[in-house]
Amino acid sequence: MCFKTIQGSSRLSRSSFFQIPNSRRNLPRSAERRDIERDTLPQRPTARAPLDDLLAIGTVKGKYKIPYPLGRRIEPFSGQKSIKHGMRDEPNPAQAAEEAIPKPFLDVRVKELDLVPALVGLCVGYEAGRWRSQELVQHMMEWLPEFALTYSERKSLAANSAVRLIRAAVRSIYATEKFKNRGEFGELLLHIAIRQVFNTLPAISKIYYKDADNVTIKGFDAVHVVAGDTSLELWIGESKFYTDISKAIADVLEELKLHTEDAYLRREFAAIVNKIDAKWPYAERLRKLLDANTSLDTVFDAACIPVLLTYDSKAVSTHQKLTEEYVAAFTSEVKQHHATFASRQLPNIRIHLFLIPLKSKEELVKELDEGLKRWQQL
Image (cartoon, rainbow, N blue to C red; front, side, top):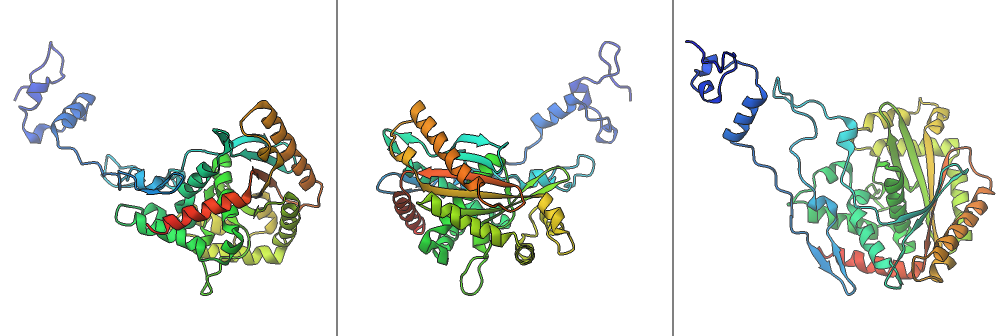
């Protein structure tokens, strides 16, 4: 059979191509042919996002929406498909670890990383003459699934499991002893702060793992990592959800001293390793870093302790709007508290101090309590 040519060229016309028997259609897939296949062959249906219409739970002052995972798109797999063999390649760890997260809410008013320790001041802000406590509560609710669920559970969120898993996440906070002092709220704010500002990745969900007495793992309030192409930074955090900044500083300094002792670190690392989700992309790298045979010097060189403190703030309570005067008062206040913290004896390890001034911790706790109780009814 002779192939029909176009103006003396050897390229087949679109019409003549389909006259060639299948046995002879072994030509390379040109861009034109790919376009023809795309237009003529049936396409695989796209997975529908679960619960497209986000559920909303009404409250007296507003609505709390089901958080981001319920609205994110479900992809068939995280790796790339091989054109040659039609098989799935191994997923890239960085791509596989990426998860949709809520949009930033807290404003970074102060960020001075050259200080020792580094300082980050986070601001809740105002709206219509009031401190934005309601919006902060809603934002914290949006982070609950990532904060309280394992990596595997978060990846499995779908229409038939989302409500059940989120309900379990909410109830896990009420089930711990720390809730009597609202300690989990500080841990949640710490989780949000380091995720938003430094793009860390949660390694384990401490609140998920409890022993028979329903007690969370003692020790660090956050276990995150910052992953590079070949490196892995360990971020092990502390938080104090307090009204009095002086007491918050004093208490966290005691914990920093205890939690950086060699024997304590070895016990805590062993507990962390046992709780790492096997499906988490950086599981093996973190296990190797925290292995008993790895020198603590090596761990400390690749570690950072983020410390988050809240307190009832004079700068916040004496203003009702974002103004130059407020920003100046806010900045002066957090730098003063940073100076107090930095003047104390600190462990020889990299520390980042996060300060979140509040108008009223009591008011915030009340609204958080109301929001969580409504979420329990899902």
